[in-house]
Amino acid sequence: FGRTPKINATAGRDHWPKVFSVVMGGGGLKGGMVYGESNATASEPETDPLTVENWASTVYHQLGIVSDKELMAPGDRPIEIVDGGQVVREMIA
Image (cartoon, rainbow, N blue to C red; front, side):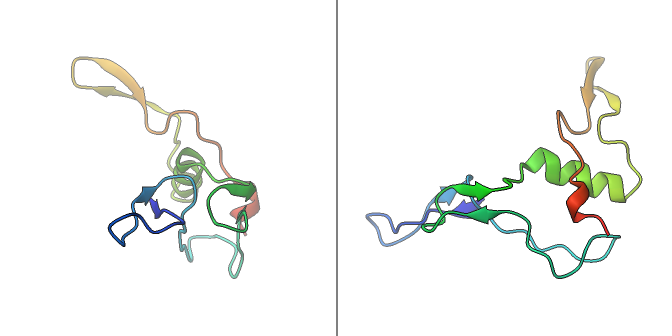
């Protein structure tokens, strides 16, 4: 989570899932790049929003793990490692 772009009534900031930062390095990723952009108030994604699913799929891809592989959860319930994520090729060197 990021933090709300505005200070709340108790002089703090709350969780804000719409815009957040992630720092990544190595692992075959492009160095020195910024992916995506927020609007002027950092309240909404402006360009190239990165979902958690796409971020996780990209990390797993670089680790050699198939992110949409089905595993069996307790109770014989099939689940994917990441549900619906896509690898972000622009981040890969």
